[in-house]
Length: 225
Length: 361
Ligand SMILES: Nc1ncnc2c1ncn2[C@@H]1O[C@H](COP(=O)(O)OP(=O)(O)OP(=O)(O)O)[C@@H](O)[C@H]1O
Ligand SMILES: [Mg+2]
Image 1 (spheres, chains in turn yellow, purple):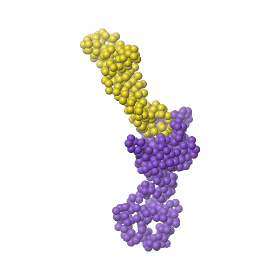
Image 2 (cartoon, chains in turn green, blue):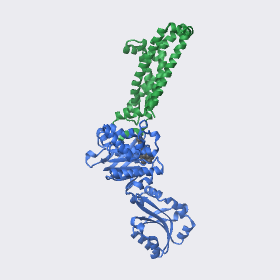
Image 3 (cartoon, helix red, strand yellow):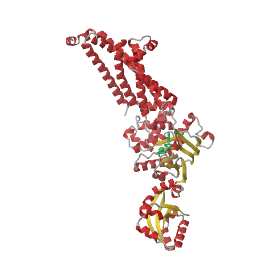
Image 4 (cartoon, helix red, strand yellow):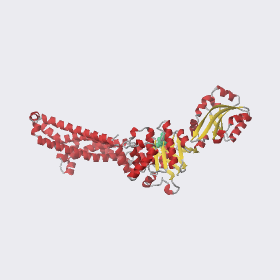
């Protein structure tokens, strides 16, 4: 206890704030990830099946939706944060704090994830889809039960990659009032030059990233062949 | 069982349009194994995919399982079409198994979709996997199977719904000759045991001659020859059919032999090079020695072989006949009267290594 106090005096002193920051980050990351998985998968499926030669091919939608997705992908996150302020206020009632950070994060991450989901879904062999159609399966069943299942390795991998990006976004969002570890590290570690806080914050973030990667790989091993 | 009437199919590809099928008509009787052969791009896959309407036709009719209009699957709406498709199994060149499902789950897949109860699924899958000889491998994943085993799983899966018809699109094209043979034997067994009508698409003659009782030759979207397999390839009417027949009888080897000095001498002395095709009973007679005895001609066997069409042997013999013109003609007439197909080979062109068959009847 004595050594910890001498090595990391500020971490011990501001332990309560630090703990709250960790909890905030965990909430931001997990809620964002959950929403991104839902919206990303949904839009990813739509992007895949409306493409040329696919189950619901549609030239008009295929000319519009990918362009919108790309547009959002092209805007840097920090700019998006500012741009979305009014929208965020409209949806969650505030533009700061944990809820205020989640909205722009979801909007920033969803296009990335949906593109990745689209790619992995398009990798599912058209032959397999033909086979399912030749058995008289309905199209929704083919999408939900066959394509998603066959593409699950790629889908899980894209969730892992995006969860890591979300940690980094959550850290950035903290800087402009989102709270969490990023905010804590900037205000105390950087602002008051408490190096031990910066150091421990980085460690906590690394542990977070690595454990998410570990969980992802575990799920991957359990579900694929 | 399947009645195809004058179907047309054009693929619209940007600026160019590909006419894949241009007026195809075909009749497949119940319990038959019907082959469709053609070169790459001739429209075979398009044709078979029209039969289960994976590809919609531009015009024409396809009756499946009856002649009245509600059996015309080109007119069915999607929901009714799906029902109809479940009565037609399909197998593919690349097997199309689900990689994340094991053998058992792959075969059970259509039964799960059609909400068959668990006990019945278990019984049916066991039956099917025993039929294809893979019950021991039920827990294996496709990545752990050989090509032949994968195709067996695919066949079991295609049969899961008790279909009346099995459609096979190049099912053996990715397999080695031995495996091909065993898969063909399995298809034959399925046809005989379960009475399932099979339509087989192939570009290899071996597949067609081994198990198809009838065949259609497809060329640039048109059927150029069709009928009993033996008839079609012993008496081709179109050059594409002839080329398939020649590959079967290894006729290309004839060219080298015809240009040999010995044969040239015979021809120079007024002899004739001809092809005899023996079918059925005519194969049992000692025809060659008989005509040389009775008509005073010398018959010199150049080259020959026997090809099995299913169980029927077809003997194929190239001979050089020498003697007087009169005697040769009499000998030929006699051979033909005994049911031997005869054709004279034009040897004038042998110098530039081209011999063509002169149909003669
Ligand atoms: N989806 C498609 N879009 C455009 N053109 C197509 C399509 N499918 C096939 N074609 C064209 O139609 C023609 C017939 O194709 P098909 O696949 O039926 O030939 P095939 O006889 O099965 O050939 P292979 O032996 O190579 O499989 C070809 O010229 C092909 O390029
Ligand atoms: Mg093909």
